[in-house]
Length: 257
Image (cartoon, rainbow, N blue to C red; front, side):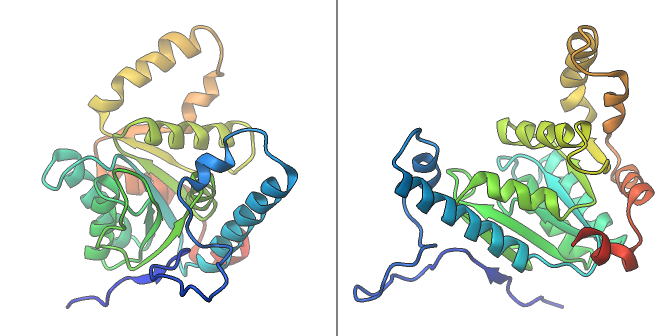
């Protein structure tokens, strides 16, 4: 049975604003984040940017609402359908949905599309937090709901805030940023210790060796920090790891909101 099209929770207007209308504070401008991070500016410009950031954050927390625990899946936008990692993410998404979880991604193609696709096939909610980037300009077609942000860092807050677990598949700089920021937040006690699962043993092996041979050897992290994540190729094991930590569904709203 086919599903209705995704409910658009879009931060920007997609239609042109009439010339007589006042421009919206949330209207898209080119290079908005580059402008915000460009360096010292006058106070009015900084205040305008701060208001934009606050409104995007506020819109996110008021819009994203789940009736079940949510798992965020990170991974590259560059993997094509049919590739081994795409298939792995699709299987993961389906099994998470069948186990009763909502699945949230960055909303783009590649691993994100695969996880959202699997979640839809498994009968669970499929959510995307999208952003306009060169390789993921449009939300993938397997989303039930999506929201778009101008600022990358606001998007990352949303991807972390509403999740009880994180599953990370192979990816590039963005994926590495997401995994290490999440681990840092747990290491420093800024968020609770939630399951972090790295899927794709062969891909992550050099990074694990770097952690062992450089970080651990030089004591830049502690022994217990290695317990913040597990590595597997099995979607079943990933789901079991999530289930071993997850809060009961009937306590979800009171614990997270």
